[in-house]
Structure formats: structure tokens, C-alpha cells
Length: 319
Figure 1 (cartoon, one colour):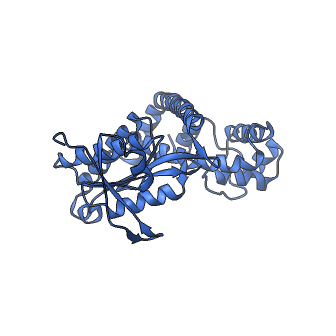
Figure 2 (cartoon, helix red, strand yellow; figure 1 turned 120 degrees about the vertical axis):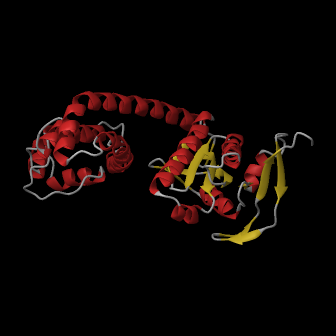
Figure 3 (cartoon, rainbow, N blue to C red; figure 1 turned 180 degrees about the vertical axis):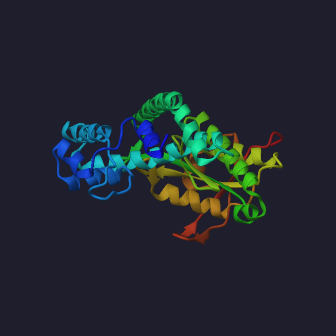
């Protein structure tokens, strides 16, 4: 099988249309069609290159119908397309590892042949799983949106950062296998803690995880559990963490606002194996007997001339 044939198998149809022919089939200007295409994260192609399938025509018609339905404002279709493109590109990269692992030690021709053999079974299973996971995530996101309190239309959210200590120096000493294994464990196990309390991982930044929860107690539990887990595991480097509470702007799945910046600065200021929280979080948990809070000296950090961190620990059994 040629690589072009494999591409047709993966796409579900052969690439036999140019971008002008796609636009003509849908009945829109080529420039509008190209805008949607690039918003989804796909590369621009030459005008006469046959790079599109009949499925691309159907997808473009669906996007336009969504904008014309009134359910999704037409001027936000590109925003929605960009968000979907970014997230699904990451998902596709993770899934293609299935092909990579199965092709180790094979020639290019053998790899293509194996991909051809796997695709009929693998693609329907992955597609079904992606749709199911999306539905569950959409339902959870909808529930969070309706349940969250808000200030001026912005949900009040606990934002947490968990950061690997001295990661840059350590990564220079590790081989590729150790680096991959460490990052995978850190991201996987931290993500499991976040989802266990009903929170959401916003993004991973290599040596850090940014997450949100509906309440500060859940956020500090994720942070403390991660700190504790790394303390007792010699294979994992120490972590430090920061949690802040307040209204955030949610856009394209990302979060913005003062709590995000505060959580990041608090993490930078935290010592290894510790969690720092902001004043709002400290006040929210002041009457919770599970935690000890120690107000630290004020300090000037990037973006904040006067930041007051609180060191948060679990209440000692003997206290």
C-alpha cells in the first residue's frame, strides 16, 4: 500500500478535491472555507492541490449549519473550531503512538503495511472512545458551569499549580527513558487526583500541572496529596505547589485572571515539599480544623508589589 492509500484509509475517503472545489461544493467563498480550515489547525495547501475529501465538504457544511442555527453565534464558529483543533491535535498525537510502538524495528514499507492492517479495527474503536469521552467531559463541564458561583459573570474557582522542583537541572542528568517515565507518572498521577475530587486539569506544562476545582478544599487536597506522594517515592522528584481562589475567565478551555497569576507566583515562592495559598484561600479554610495556616512575610513578586502567602499544612495529630 502506498502512503497516499493509507491516508485515504485513515481519512475515510480519497483526497480528490482542491480547496476551490470544496468551497464551490458548499457554496461559500474560498477565503471563508480556508479560514475555517486553518482555524481547525490544518496546514494551508496550494490552490490546485487535491488535499480534500468529500468528508471535508460534509464537515464544512456542518460548521456553517451550526452557525446558521442560532445555537452557536456565527462569529464564534472560528473560536470553537480553533479550540477543537488544538485539543484534538494533542489527542491524535497521543493515539498515533499506537502505530509508533507497533512499528518499532520495521522498515517504512513494513510500517505502512502494519498500519493498513491495524486501521480497520483501530479507527472505529478510537472514534467511539473519543466521542464517548467528549460526551462525558461535556456533561461534566455543563454541570460545573451551572453549579459555580460567579462574580460579574465569572465563575469563582480554586486554581492550583503543582511544579516539579529543580526539573531543568534534573532533566539534564536523566536519559530520555527516565525523563519520559517521570513526566508520565507526574502528569498521570496528578491528573487522577484532580479528577477524583471533581476538578479539571487545564493543561500540563512539562514540569507543572495547572488545575481547577470548584472549592479551595479540593484544590489544596490535590496539592497536599501530590506533595506527600513525591516525598515518599525515591523515583519522583520533590514538588511544590500554590493555590489561589477567585473569579476566572474561562476561554477555549483555558483559564485566565488574578487567581491563575497568584497560584503561579505562590508556586514560584514555595519551598520544596510545601504548599502556599493566597489570602482568599486562607480565609475560606480558616475554620477548617484539617489545616494549619501560617501567615508568611509580605513580599514583592512579578506582577504583585505586596503578596502575602500562607503556608498550609495538615493539622498535626498531636495538636
